[in-house]
Each structure stands twice: as structure tokens, then as C-alpha cells.
Length: 291
Image 1 (cartoon, rainbow, N blue to C red):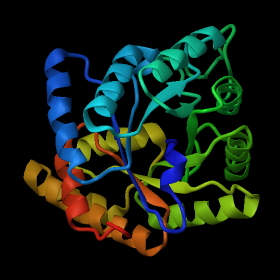
Image 2 (image 1 turned 90 degrees about the horizontal axis):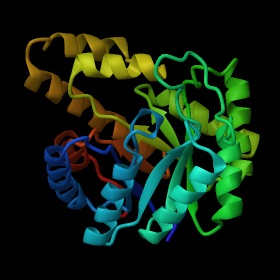
Image 3 (image 1 turned 135 degrees about the vertical axis):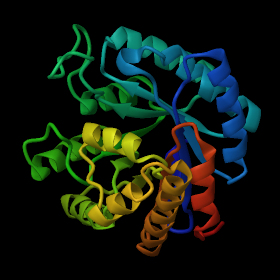
Image 4 (image 1 turned 180 degrees about the vertical axis):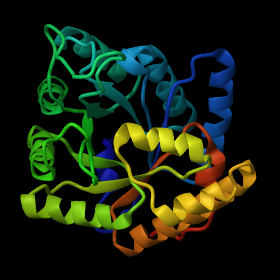
């Protein structure tokens, strides 16, 4: 089953994103966290990988294990970074052999130390090219792509960023999962713009519950997300109190998720950072349609 089937008039998709640990201890801890997340009844899980594909094999191991243990659909992230068409074909063949039927197709960030992305020899320069390749070579696979409510940092304008997104959808993407954001009005405006442009696939908001101010400031600086000033001020009140920051972050995420659900979103995708506690608390506090 491809992940696009979890969204529709009478369906509300719920998904979680993991990342592959670098150590055996981390893998054990991830397995424990995945078990806790399963209790919330996700429709599928995805797994990213390290810069330049450094943990690509472990990504496949993580999601293949989740699929086998829980009989849950899964999706592997895949980027253009450092990949040729041949290496992409080899990886996707192994993914299918492992029971992985879905891909989150991304261009990827420039390798560390490089300011601009350059397509590898024999590879692809843009995500729409990667999507077209997957659709042509592996037509049975479901494909999700990234969307940016606050505009991709490299895009010359919001209009050009949306045109790039439409190219990805027109190339064969089934689903758009957004980058994290903390102003819901940005998402609702983005969704409306997608509809006006003729992007007819589900546009799913991606949420990252905040548990640590320093951490989210680093992440937001990398992806261009803006934190509401009152929210930042509340987190700063608990600068030396990790538990206080956690509670402030969870309360904000519950309110954010509730407003999105009330706004008739297709589903919710949580960036859980391999920590189940915050996401679990948010889901405990939000009534999801049909769940």
C-alpha cells in the first residue's frame, strides 16, 4: 500500500519521521521509542539519513525492521546528494526487496562545506528529476515530496518555489509533506496557493514539538522557520529548566495541532527526533478525526 492512500475525504493520515542512529545503543533506544509511537496508531513511518547518504544503509535497516515487526507501511528518504542514477536504482531495488514501497524524494542539502548544491556526475540536480526517475523505473512506489510554507531558503521567490513544487507533483509525486513551521497562517496560505496553482495532491503539515530552545533555534536557522516571539519568550523563561521548556513546547504544539485539525488538514506528520514523549503528549491532547 502506498502512503497516498491514507489521505482522503474520510481518512486522516498520521505519520512519524525517524532518523537512523549511528550506534548499536542508539538502535536499541530507537526500537524502544518506535514501540511507544506505534501505540498511537500511525499509518506509516519514514526515516531520513545522514548528510551525503552517510547512514543510508542503516535507514533501510530501520524501516525494514519496523515494517516486519509491526506490519506497518514505511517510506525511505532519498536525495540526489552523492547519488548517480545507477546507485539510486540499486538502493531502490534493495528497498523493494525489503518490503519498502514508499519514498520521500528530496534534492537534499549541499554537502558539508559547500554553499551551493551541484549535481553529481550521472545524477540529478533537482527533486523533480528524482521523482520522474522513480516514477519511471519503480512505478509501484509511492512518492512524497517536500513543501515549504515559509519558502525554501534557496528559492528566489515564493512564486518560483511553488512552481518548483508543482514540477515535482507533475513529475509523479503523490503527496506533499511540509517542512516544520510554527505559524499556522503560513501553512494555510501555502495550502491555498498550492490549490490555486493546480497542485491536487494532499498537502500534509509537518510538525516538530519543541523540547529545547537551543535545539529548535539551531534547526530553525537551518531551514528558515520562524518562531513566534511570544513562544520564544515563554521558552526563555525556563532557560535553565529543561522540564519547563518541554511543557511550554508541548502546550504550544497541542494548540498548533488543534488549530490545524480544525482547519481540515489532510493529516499530521511529526518530526519526532527519535523521542516519543513530546509527540505522545501532543497526540494525547488532540482529538484526531476518525481516531
